[in-house]
Image (cartoon, rainbow, N blue to C red; front, side):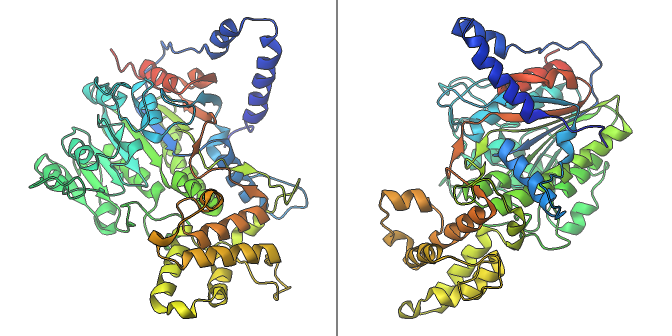
Length: 507
């Protein structure tokens, strides 16, 4: 599809080396200004079809892990990667992700930077850091210019990243108010996840209007079955398409858990393109939100599967580019990194074993349910870790030391870690009084499950440093009209400025 793989990591390394070398000769403030200078001016043709893909929690480690996992499936004698298609886009860049509060940002602040071009604080959606002034996302500007607007997410559609493209709120947790802003928007297609608080119950609002009823009164068609969603087309009008299968957070299932035939992120992109098709063009933003959630939980396998599906979703947009190369722009980026994922672990030194991750058959959420069911069906005095060995093998491929035929045999120290975690998991959540060490190793996750993912990750040669976000920059990939603006190193607010310039959103 593309003639050569972009050498983004060597480029980043070279830029960092230049930073060190030149800093010896230039004043610090002068060099910083020169290094961050980027071109946000565009005089070329305005694209008719614009796609912005955001892998939530996605940076170089998540992309590299997916590529190495795919390469390992070839089972070659030497290391080999299979590139995700979007990493071969002709223009590549690197964007800083810090917000007005911290070098380690959240999705609301970084999303606001991309959607509206300003730095703001943790948890704030399209408002200044003082929470006094609203700012306009590019989507509203483009809607006023005649573009149709689509917003798609694999997590709830009122979550922080999709919300920054249609809402203004002092807090990302104002789910009901965010939902109302969606229902009252003039946008054209919302797809993927559902609503966290559609009736204002969580917000404790008396006699609250149902968000979906408000949306219907405002002309939205609300569909929530596979059959209804697949029938959508350019004559369907304004649509809210809610995935038939949602978890307790109103998000789509992890790709690793998705049943054959159920809708996936790429299906919503393909259907969104059909619904938004019109003579004036459209702007579509697509978030793969569960990459972030998987990395919060340190579940490398779940992250990898969702990253691969993210690539599939991008390639649905690429079909539009292939058909209309002189009218299309596609941008792929992340909002921040999550989990501190590293390709490397002290116990495996210079080796990786990505094939071991193929043994994982469900996400951490799936195994949490197994633990919950076990506790419901077993008397406390009968709790035994050994009872769960068959389920552990089925879910992660890990087996006790007696099974010498497996390449995923648990060591004595690993079994000790599992026994300690099992003891904690069998306690009621309210009774788990963690010491500082336990807070670090378990976070807020089910102790047994997260210990299992850690052990499998480490056996594969991967590790995590956090259950939160990190301050890593993110890659930016572009193809189409104006792609050249996205080459280089810049701030995440510049992504917005470049898109505004290319689409002439301010004119």
